[in-house]
Image (tube, rainbow, N blue to C red; front, side, top):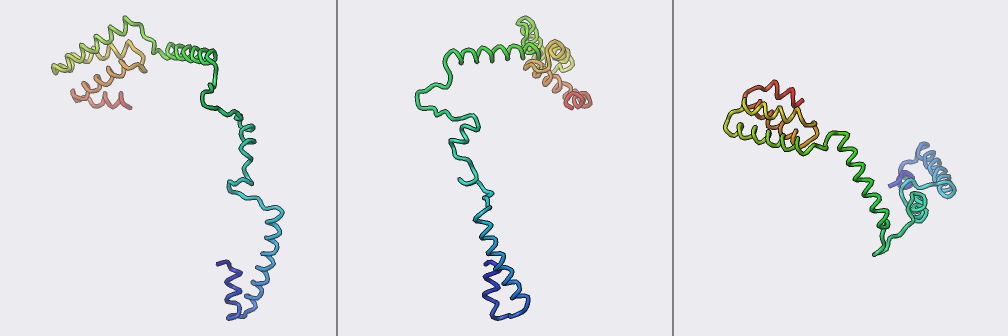
Length: 171
């Protein structure tokens, strides 16, 4: 219940100078706010008055094209050019980071990883460590084989109760 209505409802019971002054002030304020609402009021919420029309939004934000069923966004030539550019960028990234591995080096590292796994399965953890270290030294950090070797190496170190070495690797 707004204050003006409450004061008018209770105004007959309590006639004080403050209540009558408050009533007159609220009535004046209500009159001026109605005038203000008509001339300058802008809704702060999202409504059709505050938001531009959809067609204007499409133009303003780069849209404006309606795609109908069966239509294609880009031609076959544009799509092929875009895919070729993507492949080129990926190849450049992989070579820069070191993810492109020589096949002979990859086979050598996979063999060393298997040898380390076989020693680890036999329980010879100290003998397995050099194989994992070999893989970790030859391959970049971001490769999957380096990650597997590092994981197995840290498991061996942990099983050999070399916690300090494992903590330094993990942190």
